[in-house]
Length: 618
Image (cartoon, rainbow, N blue to C red; front, top):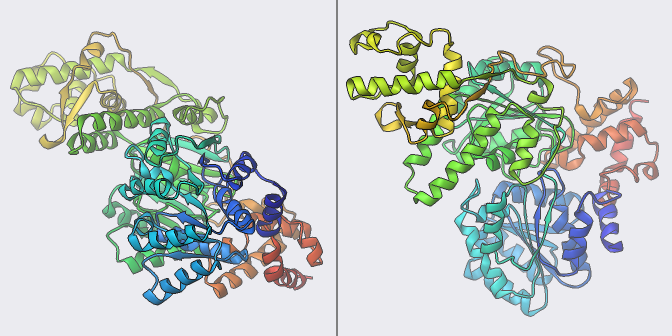
């Protein structure tokens, strides 16, 4: 561990390990297999990068890192180069000549780490390279990043990951470390089975991200709600907005741009060059809002994403947790905001029901969706619910919307029975099924053309729910569908159907408790924000006026260096490191040496520039 601590300080610039990192590094350096579950921003990469360096120094050779995305490989390798670590990637962006050069470096022992996708690693050519390295005793470690991709129960299933079992079968003596930020019990068991990690030691960190504030509100005018949220909380700051469809991504990006925000769309239907350009701008520029489908985000290391917003309901809690976890990787206050409504529930149920998957698989998907819906409808602490899903007990956080402004609850059992009774009666009267809007019109006593056409003003339930608002009834319908007490037939214009679960509600045996609709989300004044003006960096919030000036100068210097090196600014130094420098106001390289985030290579490379930038203010 003395060597590992030396690497941590000299290469990465940190004085101590966090959480379970020390135990993981010690175990892997010694040649043990490991399964690591650690939240985004918890320092997973160090758990294999430090063992890779330590084991190479001990003569064990090269580490192979399995990575699912080209963008992730590029970012990781670029960051390692800045630290003075010899690393490379092998992927489709390289020419044959460039790829051959990387392979020759591998064979000569000139690289510490090589990143590659699972599809490449399991090809005969790559396996031949590994066989040669193994024969020379120069195959040190396999690091399998984003290991949840191996599981069909996860949210990013990649069947190519299943083939990685051959690494254990073919190179049994080479240790393996599999890492992920999201895995419930079912997904974890799948990882162990398919990667043959039965003998691996499991390290499960807390899933809590205390710097992220969770808020979920009822969808009314989602675009306007999003606009108000960003203007009120995060004007001028970087964020990600997730939408379900490509069309919606384009619409939201255009709307935000029209309102004066720097917003870009990202989805699989865009030209690859456009997608790459947009991703590069998001990583390299400040205050960019990316509106995207879930195709965007895995492996994005940008530390200063201040918010993640969902305009549509994700498929499950794992997906929600993974996506919201892209906010606040620097540990500073950030937001996870979501708006969802009845149509979200209908759409997700329909996608599951219409999928060609086996019934057993559909049942698991329904269970995962139910857990997410329970989180969305919850009246108690969001964080307790979220952590409970991953098997982690906790106490109310005092920081989510429900803790900050406990919602009023009303008994929707009577309204639920009236709705189900109305659905039963219209079906009996006409042998037809109808949608939510028509059923609510009947219950509230609205004489529409459709009501008159089918004679539904004569039904015994006509008008008996006039004291309920449409918003209340939509909330009841949403919960009935979420709990399976009501079904939606998407193939017949989203008509409503009773189910076996309807009986208990109709009989009054199953109560329906709902949260009162809140027109304005909680916590809207929790931070001082200028209306429509760019907010100061969260990292520099505690600095004095002089410190703020130094911080601004350091950011300007960093921007220039990042452009010169064609790298995201955070790869040079994180905001937290710049804030620490600004607070210290160092006058020499010796004073800079102890700042967290400045290792030997960065001190040598950037130290003089930092001092020059500060000196220019004097």
